[in-house]
Image (cartoon, rainbow, N blue to C red; front, side, top):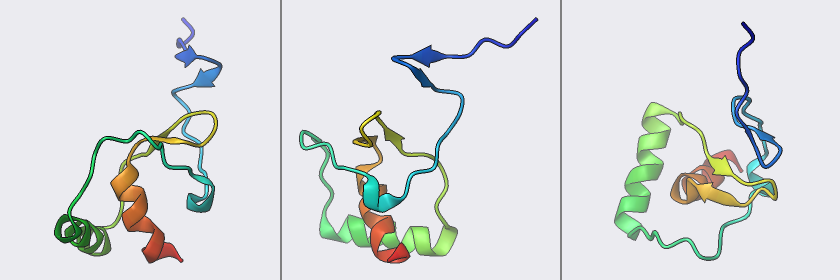
Length: 78
């Protein structure tokens, strides 16, 4: 039996795609905020443990989940 693919809005959710950070756009209505202290802790955690997990973006490369991790990664990769 063939494995079923989860395709919604033309996106195959079972196949992650790599996108350079510079091409990702912040969602302007993102309700989540982080304090400077927590942001610095996140940066240090990524430096110490590495980055794992995924960022969720739409077909226009707008971030839907992972705004703070994206912000924390940018200074580490530039």
